[in-house]
Length: 289
Image (cartoon, rainbow, N blue to C red; front, side, top):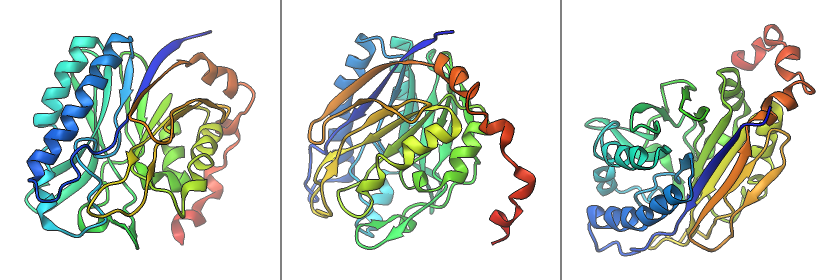
C-alpha cells in the first residue's frame, strides 16, 4: 500500500569564511543562512527534514584548535529548543546535527531528532570517528558514540541516523534496519578526493541491503582557512532498491525535496528476504577480530 512521505535535505556553504571572527559569529551566520531554507521546507509541506553534519558551523576538523570546543552545546539544549519551535510551527520532523557537549572535555558529533509536535525524541552520536590526513582530524574533537543505533518513531515514520564516516561501515547500517528504520539520514561533510567515488556507491548499497530509504546530505563550497577541498554537494535520496530518486547540484545552496513512497519498503522486502535469510549465528568472527 502506498504511503507517501515528503522529505527534504538542505545543503549549504559557509557564508563567513573568516577565522578572525568569533566562533559565535560564524555559527550565527550559518544558522541565519539555514533558517530561510527551513521555513521554505515548511511552506512546501516537507514532513521530515534533514540538515547537514554540524549544520550550524563550518567543518572545523581540518584543524586541531581548542577554540572550536566553544561551538559545542548540550543536547537537548538551545539549538534543540530553537528547532523544536520550527518543528511545531510546520508539523515537521527535524534531524538536527550539532556539536554536543556532554560535560567539560567530553564532546560528541551528534544529531537530535525532533518530532512534528516539537517533542525532542532523542539523539544519535556518531559511532565511527576518523583520523585521516589530510583534513579529517575528528578524534581531536569527538568521542566515539556510545548510544547504539536508535530508531525514532516519528509522526511520519521510523527514522534512523548515521553520520558521515559511519557510511563506510555496513554493520551499523544493518543495525538500523534491524531496529526498524524506514529511512536513514546520513548528514555528511565530504570533499572531492579519495572517497568521492564511494558517495554514490555505499549508501545505495546500504539502502538495497536493508530495504529502507536513505537521505544523504553534503555541504557545498570551500571553507577557509583550511581549504581542504571542495564540498561537492550532490545530496540525494535513495530508495529500498538502491536507486537514486532525486539529487541536488554540486555547487549550489539548495533545499532538495522528494515525495518518497514508504510503501515500497514492504514491497521490496517481500521479494528480497534479507532479514529472513541472514545468519547471525554464523557471524561471530566479525566481532572476534
